[in-house]
Each structure stands twice: as C-alpha cells, then as structure tokens.
Image (cartoon, rainbow, N blue to C red):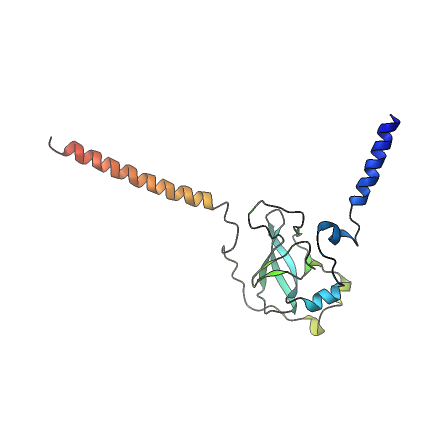
Length: 192
C-alpha cells in the first residue's frame, strides 16, 4: 500500500513538472522563445485589433470584424483568421489557437494575406488588454476600409463536396438509365 502511495505521489510530482507555467508555455508547446510583445508588434508585417463574430472548425477558424489596424494594411472591415496550419478539416494539432466568439484580440498573424490570415499558438496574437492598448500607434491606428469578400474560396468544403459528387453521380446515372430505356424502346419497336 505504501508503495502504491509513493508511486502515485511520484507520478503527481513528475506530472506537475510537465504542466507549463505562464512564462514557459511557448517553450513547452514547441514555440521559440519570443521577445517582448512590444518588439513583436514593432517587427510584425501586419497587426490589427478585431472582434470575433463567428467561429468554425471547433474554434480554430474565426471571422473577425477589424476595429483598428496598427501596422500594415490596408484591411477590409472583415477578415478571416485560421488558428491552425493544418490544411484538412478536423485535423487538430497541439499548437492550434482556439478563438472565443465575441472576444477582442490583438492579432499578429504569421502568414496569409488580406482577407485570410493563418497563425497558431506560436504567433503573438492575444486577447486585447489595457496594457496592450497602450502599445497602439498614435491616433489608435488606422480604420479598416471597404468590404471583405469572404467567399467559399479557401474555405473548408468537406461538408458540401460529398453532396456535389453525389449530385453529379445521380445525374450521370439518370442519363444512363434514360439512354438505356430509349435503346430498349427502339429495340422493341424495330422489326425483327
């Protein structure tokens, strides 16, 4: 019994070493140690503040209403940010970023172009706080311009694709049946 307790205590202690602390989370998750947020914002090609309006793919795909652009741009009023580098739907990794609908973030995406960006937990994107708001450029940044065209291009079509394939297969099968029926009628009406 003492051996079981000692083993359990050892496992709990060892497990606690694996739990990341706030300062070590990026290293544990496989992200490079990063400079202070001020430096990351200054070095990033695009930085903007936005509020999540919708989420998909278990929170990994966010539609964002852009509030202010701190760096880069121009940006439309609405963009899409994918918090995973996985290219297939329902493929999730330990580095995926999960967005909260209704939350306002300081976005520092690592890839992509207007209006679609890509990032993961290693990017500097973070919920906007008062402290981060103090990093805003003079005048609070630039307002977004125009409307985004967030069409199905680049989106996950895995739910629609089977229906489209089924529809095409159904149409081909129907055409073949009609052709066979006509041939049977012609053969039945032809003199022997």
